[in-house]
Length: 345
Image (cartoon, rainbow, N blue to C red):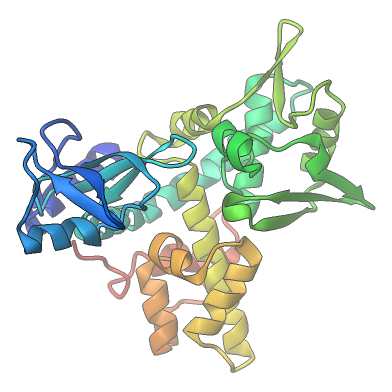
């Protein structure tokens, strides 16, 4: 489908959901402290008295500590509010129907993502064979880790403000070597402690070389004798160059966690003790994400339905061979193309 197809589906969904795509710009609604709560001020500087409108604005649930808060004056605007959090990072609050629509469009791209995944995996392997610390080689290692662990990308802002880390902000201190394996231990988003075990010998060897590079940041690339760190834009640019503009690091996480979900469901099925709750809880422990986040953002809706209803006959557990995909991924690939898994906007 690609990026244009994704955008087309979003536009189609807007009208079906009776939503209007809005820009965050004046005029909008502001809020002002009033006792223990807030009063809401319209574009003309008039305090809003309408109880239904006040209830709508309050229900958006922008945290009271957020500053420079902007509310959409339209109840059916796709973007309902924005505000600056404690780190001065802008946060966005979308209409619930828009969030659901974006997720459906994201999941509808999973088939195309899976089709392109073997190709980028081969390219990553090629870069990792190079005797080099250039940008593409280091990005290849990072995306191999993203692919195999679902690690978040991270940001310097989150590290500076909260001492939380992701693939772009890991430090040498987060790496430990044990026999023929490697551990990554760090605090991720929400201060959740993360432990990732790496067994890939080539990845381990390259990370050992990265540790030996001067400086505290783990992943740096060399150019003309100087070393430079990498950010989320570098990671996503690499992905888009090799897979298309519709994809980003989050698609790797979605694919990884959906594959883990299916693998765990099949394991529990064999033990004859499978349930949606137990599968989600197991994946939550593995990934550090809450079960609510997994359900809403990372696990294909049809997988949730499959396990909840125990519709095992919908799975072909002997899928066709497809180079570059593991067996559980091939099962998932065939499943998400089935009529059972079809998503309607």
